[in-house]
Image (tube, rainbow, N blue to C red; front, side, top):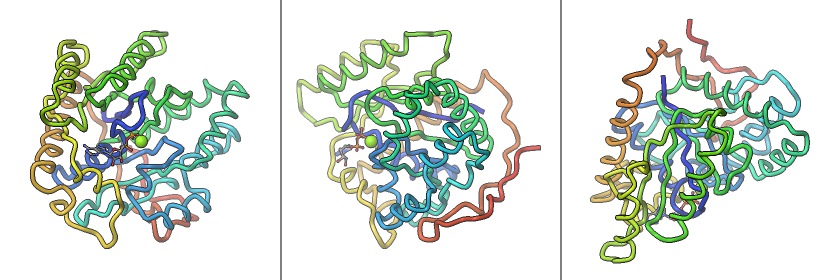
Length: 311
Ligand SMILES: Nc1ncnc2c1ncn2[C@@H]1O[C@H](COP(=O)(O)OP(=O)(O)O)[C@@H](O)[C@H]1O
Ligand SMILES: [Mg+2]
């Protein structure tokens, strides 16, 4: 099954994390999908959008983040079950109960330094490949929230994921970020690379001629596969990024035109994934979902989770 997507632009602040959040919640509520969000940014922004800060700190202190998984598997060569690091029952949308998260931690930067120092790039890539392979069989969709820049970890996601999506603003610097990314993709083609699912124009200001020009320029290159649905700049998405307690309904979080735009984007995403997968492999029977994973408010899990490999 081709269902792993790295969300990537070398430029920061273009809405990668916010769109991962909105897509995950919409895919859960509207399409009944089991979505795994992998936070690969040391800033842990999408993690903090999906749970309270105290709960995130607790997971970090208990060694239940992406960094702890990677340190064990890559640097220590320890047999650690990835499902221990999957947190269930995240999201403040009351009906988005099928969003799961592997949270991040600031220490990710130090981990990457160790990888570079010890020339462990190949090992890192193999661990990422095996994580994605297993996650593919358990979840319907896996969204990897990448940091800006092109770190060794980001390169591993981009080479091992099935697809990438590149959110961008319709402005000079963000479009330059895409150009750097395009050049990077052309390097070492023999190493493999995710397929472009589309460039996604975010935070577009209605009535800005400059943004219209950049948007038209992006559309003029068919390689960009620009999504038809544009996400406008709106306070709604800015607010959506703030975790809200108690839970709210999907419509309270994504009201009106913004809700419609996000849902339309999800439709387009699923159509593109379906078209891309139609010509490829037969999906495996999914094993049961990880019921035994940790929850944000009870993060310490000693036993491995219940998900079984497909037979
Ligand atoms: N469509 C939008 N309209 C308004 N603000 C947005 C929109 N998308 C994202 N933002 C805001 O822009 C900022 C950067 O978004 P973020 O998702 O953190 O970007 P990135 O992950 O690319 O660094 C955040 O404050 C977020 O709330
Ligand atoms: Mg981000």
